[in-house]
Amino acid sequence: MLRGLTFALTLILSLVTIKPAMAFDNYLDGVTTLEEVMDYTLTNHVSGPSLDDLVNGAIEGMLETLDDPYTEYMTADTLKEFTHSLNGDYVGIGVQVEAANGYAKIVDVFADSPAQRAGLKVGDIIVAVDGEDVYKKPLSSIVDKILGDENTPVKITIRRAYDIEVTLYRQAVKTNTVKTNIEDNIAHIQVTSFGDDTAEQFNSAVSQAVSQNVKGIIIDLRDNPGGYVVTAVQMAANFLPAGTELVSMVERSGAETTYPIFGDRQLVDVPIVMLINENSASASEILAGALQHYQKAQLVGQQTYGKGTVQTVIGLSNGGALKLTVAKYQLPNGQFIDGMGLTPDVKVKTPELQLFRAKQLLQSTDEPITLKLNVGQHHATINGQGLNIQSAPYVHNSVYYLPLCLVMETFGYQVEWNQGRNGVTMVRGGKQLFVPLKGDTVHPVAVKNGVSYLSTADIAQLGVKCQIDGQSIIITED
Image 1 (cartoon, rainbow, N blue to C red):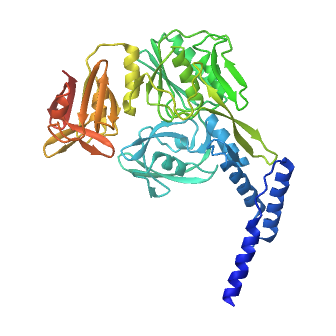
Image 2 (cartoon, rainbow, N blue to C red):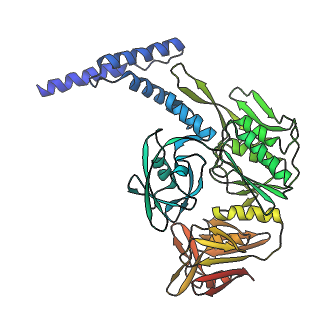
């Protein structure tokens, strides 16, 4: 009996699979078949699926065949979140945080926010969210825990001299996408996204800088995922004359649309440095690539993300939207950067040194550099200017070890890992240095958490002088 049943099932399956799949050359045939499959599944499948699940699954499966991470279906709620994030709107407590010693440190408290009303202050350390310790959690994970639906409570534990626990109710928060700081006659303008109001905010920041006769402007596009192309065009009008081509969009047909600079803004005639990193993408790369091409700005930092495709958001009848890739963008020099990104003029891998190097370029000073580090501490000073560092010096068997990349980049070297030679190459001008991972060093090169450390004795052989005073190391160039 069992053998007969097995034969019968095999015969049925064979009959089902003999007929070749149809090619849907006719659009209506394809739509009709899709409707039939959905109707039969909805009506007869033993699991009793919902229509929403089937429709969403069909859409997701359809878009997955494109192998395009930027084309996606957004529900009404997802579309709302996408638009809010682009324009700097979100629901939270109204603070800006950065990673600090394994926790999240508050670096800004927004006016008229739940955080301000609860008495949270700049410098407070967030050690727990809703009773869960966040030590060594990714910063993005901590932020996700703090965000939520409007008018819902979130319990935050703050560390000052002692721990304080406060309960706040989340509310809609509007943040500026442009922040400006003018110090030492240099304007540092940070742009977090290219939203609806970004160009207006940026233009005001530039006007403020010019009115104070700054000798240089730093445009900080690090971790900026991009946004509206027209916003980049409007921002570029501060530096390029009307009619200058900023970018062109090339469709699959080969049709090309050029985006020129427009407007009558007064052109800024001061040196410009732009900060970029691996998370600078899309409109960030358009603006940075154009200003680099026209030699209006130097790029400092790391290779950008390489998102060279253009999406349009198409509203759907259900309130959702389809974000669809419709073109690739081309920089004025004819370069397509999708998957490659922009190469900085000055490579600086250490994030905490990138702003310092940008200021160095604008100040054009020959002042000798003094770097001061402290054993076990994530704080350093360069010529008296304090900065937080990710990799702290340490002592092992009475040998002082220093983070190699941090030290050498401080003195202007571009540091790269050389896979072929299994070591670190450092270049500055016509001078090149090499440190092998194994051999030819007084003490072995140490690698901790992906960071290369070198002893003070070995660093001294590279032309850098290390003076040890207890737990402090003072580093200068010979």
